[in-house]
Structures are given as structure tokens and as C-alpha cells.
Length: 331
Image 1: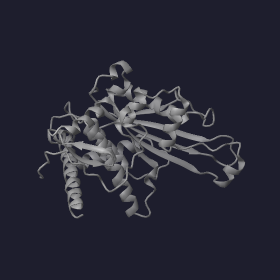
Image 2: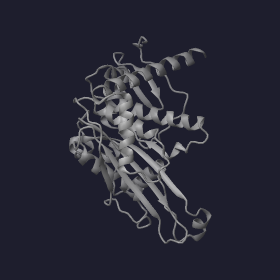
Image 3: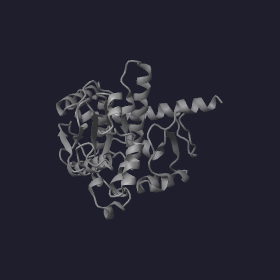
Image 4: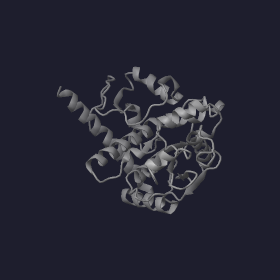
């Protein structure tokens, strides 16, 4: 263990940010604005800034408390950490598939999409699509474009934390710190233009993993529709699907046995899928369910899973703090 500083000192990771920032600080959710304000309070110092994922002493205390709910800062940190580890693994293994096809969304960005982004504003939707580098359809009228890359498959996998507040109205969203349950949405997109065809072959599948069966189903459906709206924005009929035509599967998920481990179960699903073999072009629910259940069995049974993952994440944060401190002290 290390002694946590009582003076807020910013330690910034040497790596550049791995998640596209599509909103400014003043547009972030009220929860995170409150967290930013806490930076000025010596009683809650900032411990580390890891690729723009801020961890305060109060966030670390949530991981140390076996009965505490995880907030969006803890969720954002862990997803950012998974993204970085995935890229480091790709660089180590030359034969590994390019991990840039994966995007781990910040809960604040999802909240912005659900409650502040105008879906009727095509420019705003298109800006998000470009920032997230979502697959783009080939112009079926441009024969040279098709011939240059025949049968090319564009893929993207998005890791999306789901909060039950995403299904709430804008009016109820103004309450800071709202929401009571986390789940996880896995979005798999592929677009292929085969030579000789007159349209793009599109697959857009959503897989929802909820450790409290059915609790977040409405939020997952609402979020999926909004995400697909971003995908199809300004494309017209070029890809043959609409924002309302979603393919959402409720997957069999390990079930929590208490009222506080939902965030940890959501992060467990994210980690299981982040490092799974991506050889399957179009994964199905049974394949993903097997991967998730196999990972959970490795960490522990459902009763001990939350406790074990809390320790893994907390120890990882402390290790990063020590490493960053040693690195800065060497200058």
C-alpha cells in the first residue's frame, strides 16, 4: 500500500489519450463536473490522470469498500485501461488483429449522446460518427472505389457502459449523480461491399449483458437506437438499415448476488470480450456468452467475483500511481 497524498498533484500518463474526446469539459455530465470541482478540495485529492481518466481518492475508496457502488469515474478509468492494455498487447504480438477497430466509450460521452445531443442535427450526428471512426459504406455508384478494394470488410466493435438513467427524460437527468444500475452493451458493426452487388452488406448487432436480468433492458434499447442513429446519419439508404431497425440481443449474463456489484459485473463483461479471439466475423450471442462465463469462472464464482475484481482494479491503480511517481522522480 502507498500513502495517498493530501495535496492534489496531477500525475499524467506518458501515453496520449486513447479515446476520442467529442465533448468539451463544460458539456460533460453533471456528475463529472462535480468530480472536477472536487479537485480544489484537499480532502479529496486527484491521485492520477490516466489518458484523461481522472481518479480521486474518493473513487479509490469506492473500490476499497466491498459494499459501494462504482461511479462513472471508476467505469471510465477501467475501460480506458482496457483500451490501452489491448493496444500494448497488439504491439507485442505482431500477428494479432488490429485493435484500433475497438472503441471504449466514456460514460460521460454516452450520457452526452443520450441527453444533450440533438439526433435531428445531422451535423452533430456526423461529427460523432467521424470521431468514433465508424465504418463508412462504399459509394455503390463509384465502380472504381469498389474495384480498388473488392470484398473489403470494415469492422468496428464498441464497448458501451449502460446506466439506467440513459432511459430517463432530460428533465430527470438534471439531477446530479442519478442512476442506480450499470450494465454493458457490446456493439458489433461490419460493412462489406462485394464486387458485382448493388448495395453494401451491413451487419449491426447489439448484445446487452445485464447482471440484474431485465433491469436495464429499456435503457439498452434506447441507447442502441441512438447509437444506430449516429451510424446511419446522413447516409440515406446507402446501407439499407434505419435507426429504428436495431438488432438487440439480451444475453445470458452471470447474475450478481447483492445490490452493489453491477458496475464490476459490467466491467467484467467488457474485459472478457476485449481480449477474446476476434476471428469470428459475425459473433453470435452464444459465442459471446461462453466467453463471458468462462472469464467469470476464472476470477471467481458470482459471490466472490465483485470482491476479486475490486482488488484487481484497486491494486492496478496503486501500481500506476507508484510507477508514475517513480518516473517523475527520475527527472
